[in-house]
Length: 168
Image (cartoon, rainbow, N blue to C red):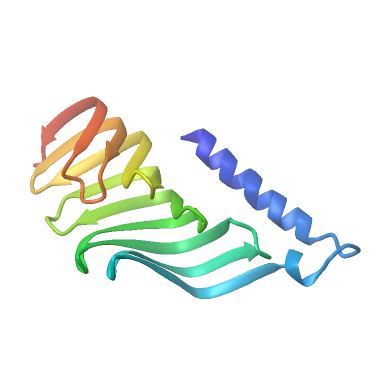
């Protein structure tokens, strides 16, 4: 989990430092501040997922976009499956992969809720991976653990180091 935070911090610092070089600055190397960032992907004419961020940063045509206060909504045949919400993240538009950091929540249409500090969405495999501690909440039952792997609607889940408890 710390590795993901360090990666995010290093990439952010690299982008900011490289944009402060005024001597070699061109339009393509400046940071673009995007407010109301949104992207939607489809497959066979049906929505797969939609990403909306309050703010985003992109350096020229880089294949990395830094997101702030975002929501990734998953669909199946244009119907809602789940939402992934986080304070910040790294989005790789060329592959559709996403790293989410800080206050990460996933809420499914069946009211299953996942809470964690960091999570990776692998768009090719259509899998979520939360390497750190997680809480999985359904009704009045909580599963605690770490190193979760799941599909995006949390109905096929593998968690290492699991313990459960009934919510009071």
